[in-house]
Amino acid sequence: MKFRLAFILALALILPACSETANTPEVPLPAYVLAIDRFDESTGMWMVILATESNDEKELRALVENTRTLAKDKKEEVNSVSVTIIKPDGRIPSTITAFGRIALTSKGMEQTGLSSTSEMVFEYRNAPAASPEKPPTTPAKETAK
Figure (cartoon, rainbow, N blue to C red):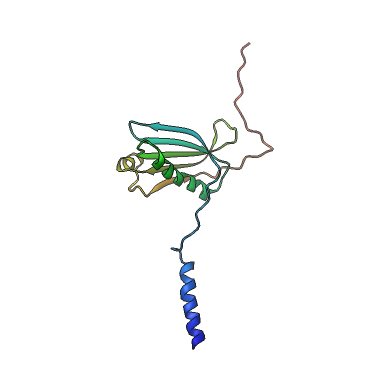
């Protein structure tokens, strides 16, 4: 009887840790570079382009979500953030791997079409990894004769 009681107690302690609501570890942010940083003071819209080698959807989503924190740390009042993530592959134009939009205020919700400031729009594009066999292509330059 004591064994059954101990077993039930152990299950009661272990099973909640396996539930979907249990805390999951945060996805680490991949290394990235802020390639373009444009802020429109009249609208409060912040447009950023981030360059990263990562092609992992969860990491790219975490990068977009991280811009929420970066926006809150800016001295200007940011209403919304538009994020484009590119792969620094030397191509012209760069390979786009993801897009995202975040609203931080009610005005930002109007700008992005989101219904709350806790939502995020994320569009993932599974871009192929850069191949060392195929060098990046650049447009040919015209030469005057």
